[in-house]
Image 1 (cartoon, rainbow, N blue to C red):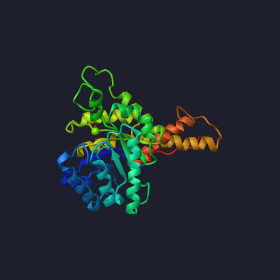
Image 2 (tube, helix red, strand yellow):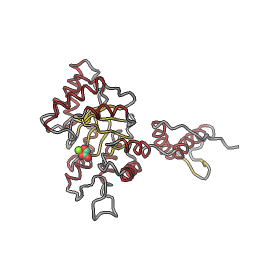
Image 3 (cartoon, rainbow, N blue to C red):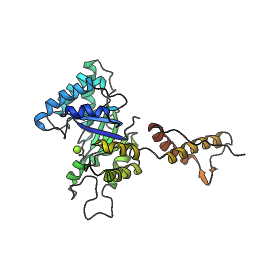
Image 4 (cartoon, rainbow, N blue to C red):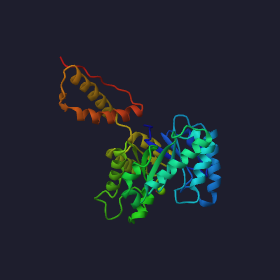
Length: 312
Ligand code: GLV
Ligand code: MG
């Protein structure tokens, strides 16, 4: 699994941002040809994106391009031009506004054609599918199963809120009148469950008030607590906060590694399936939970500060 704690959106029409993005600490960068690019400059943005992929230094980052959605006149050329010219520099294509599994199947097929023609390994480029409307959410499970190339389901809150008629203009915040509830819970949980049922990552979308880093943290914590792997970021100030929120704390990471080590000892040396670790009872389910936290900590580059000492 690639690290995706923070996924930085970079408008393909802005060469300065395409340059700057290479220096930032986001786990993933996606070069955008969709909604951050005006219709009048879609073609020019494609050329910028190809140049940035070819000439830029993206070492250590997951690199994706967001093409236009499958119902637009731009999407097929987006895929063909970018992948023909720079498919070897690309990890994933992000497909927005996926409302039906056929959109993913279309992209999978087209990617295969271009990969073959360009002499690229067939099937290497992954797909990230954005769920951004009511139909997409209803079809989330089928979308998640639509192609072996799929790596993530991505929530698109702005388009989604518009699609269902939610009464707010502030993406990621609770709509006025619903402050006691969480208007996003069902959507996030449904996307997360569909993703996990098919072994995919789940990524939360953007928080648009870029000066409100506390607000970003709140929204990010909510998604991280449920189990989401990461969130979009739009500004350098969100990157630091996002990387922190989506990494386990040192204490939780140490605790998870301790459970794994202790459980290994108890099941093999003492041949017991349930045992005490301090005041805590651990068993096979504890091991599974610990694996999740340990994997996130390792991916975030944390190192252990505690070791298990067998009793006696
Ligand atoms: C992202 O694409 C969104 O619509 O929130
Ligand atoms: Mg969108």
